[in-house]
Length: 370
Ligand SMILES: Cc1ncc(COP(=O)(O)O)c(C=O)c1O
Image (tube, rainbow, N blue to C red; front, side, top):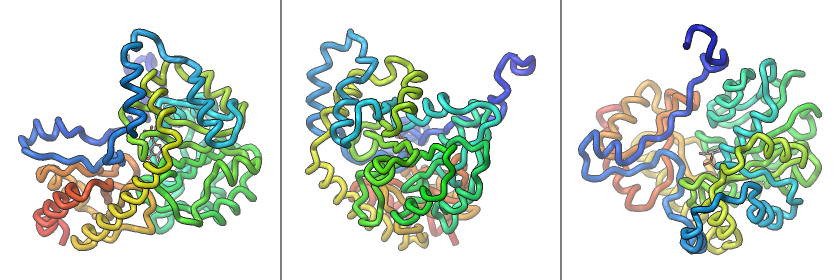
């Protein structure tokens, strides 16, 4: 069946997303007493208390299908951001929004432009549909928005700006985005991926909903409940953008993609600004601590990194380092699938997890990185 044209030709070029390894699998395979996961940029804390309560309240009604239109969630997000209900697209994670946007927009002959190394879904979902990804090399581990613009052709439909960029953690600042939007041609829809938005309080980091979408730019701004809100396992994210794009995304989304619990927990999480501030501050402290640990072991993470993760160049030793850390019970992220086979990415954890990592690095770096 693979040779007789039964499968779509686009699939032959498709390399699926490789998720970070699960703790249980590593524990089982390597027989380790303790395994920590600093691989998938999840927050180290669980759901907000109000989200846990909302899920408990709903549990008895799970015999019912979810609200396919995600009415309350979209309404709550519209209110929070001061936009219209029709301008809120929801998805099974930010990833679901990116997937559905791609389905709504892309086909053979179309192009997308993104920086590289970067978040692989932009590329995977384009390739899946037979569209062409144009990967623009980062400059000193950061998106160059001028280089993205130079790569735009009449066939470009989507330009992705991953801000901050996963995996490098670096950001593009206000004046760079402003200059980009002055120059980007009308036929392009720009996707500003702000999956880590709530972690960031740098004053020159732009809020693309407030500063670009509300200023009338042709942009879809993507956010998620997976990171600071601690709901990665539930799968819920959203985009804020032009109503006609939101309608198109809604047409290709499967009706019940966003579970009852995901919708309820997301709605309940909104508005707890104190908890957000507490987690933002804890992440900032944790990121500084993680950076110190990495520097002590000979790495030099690019910066300023503003998300909940750090990037470490390890050259040809990256895979060896990943495997050595795994044997020590620390799961980090190898980055071949992100276009960076010579680097690893490490998520900010708790002080205790950092201590565990520090000791593990002490045992492995002397053997690997010279
Ligand atoms: C830049 C970026 N965009 C989107 C996502 C997807 O997040 P979600 O869990 O909401 O699908 C991630 C997750 O790591 C990410 O790093």
